[in-house]
Image (tube, rainbow, N blue to C red):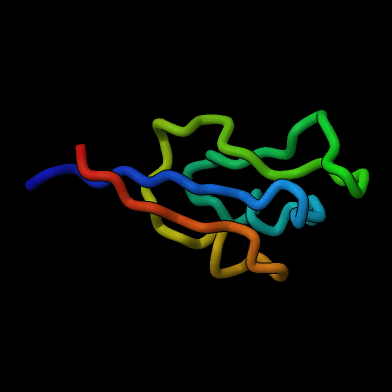
Length: 74
C-alpha cells in the first residue's frame, strides 16, 4: 500500500495569522512566516512539508477557510 503524504495551500492574502492551524497540526508542519501579507498579518505556511500527512485538521479548524489540503501518493 502506498504511503500518503499531504500538502497544503494557504491563501496568503486572506490568512489572518490566528495560529489555530498551527496548534491543531498533529505533526507540527505549519508555522507563521516572519513576512506579512498585504493586510499586515503573518501568514501560515508549511515549514516541514515532508512531515505533512494530509489529515486536514488545519483546513477544518481554519475560521476563514483559507487552507486547502491535498493528498499526494508516493
